[in-house]
Image 1 (cartoon, rainbow, N blue to C red):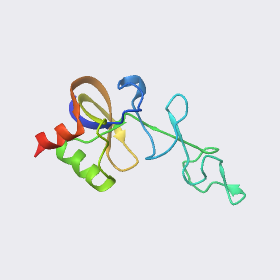
Image 2 (cartoon, rainbow, N blue to C red; image 1 turned 90 degrees about the vertical axis):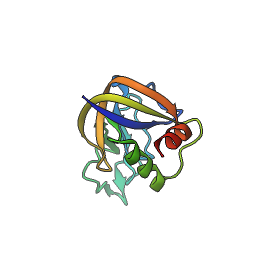
Image 3 (cartoon, rainbow, N blue to C red; image 1 turned 180 degrees about the horizontal axis):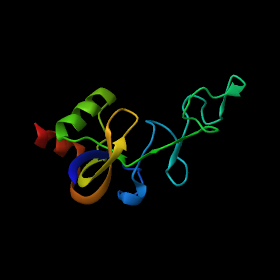
Image 4 (cartoon, rainbow, N blue to C red; image 1 turned 60 degrees about the horizontal axis):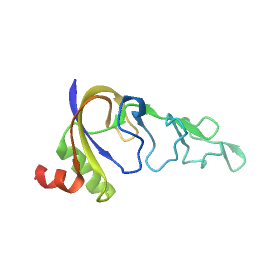
Length: 130
């Protein structure tokens, strides 16, 4: 097992192995969370009257990657969000032990949690990591 760092948005499903999926950034998820609408065709499966050109698109949906998108260090998580924008005040960081499942859409590790080490507010996490 390794330690991983993940930002958890306030509107996410409960954190745990059953919900550990990595989706496309900004995509709408299926009811079970295992798929996300294709951003290329807006979930229609078609673009300009032809099948969607995205090779991963299956009639408007793309399979999520098993495991939560996460980082292997606090510094990596902070750097990732420095390029994406500051998380909201009610977003939290979950530090957890888990097993890596693969690689996410942005090249980040994906992991399934086995034990939560700690959960803290983004601002507290950043100030503690300096």
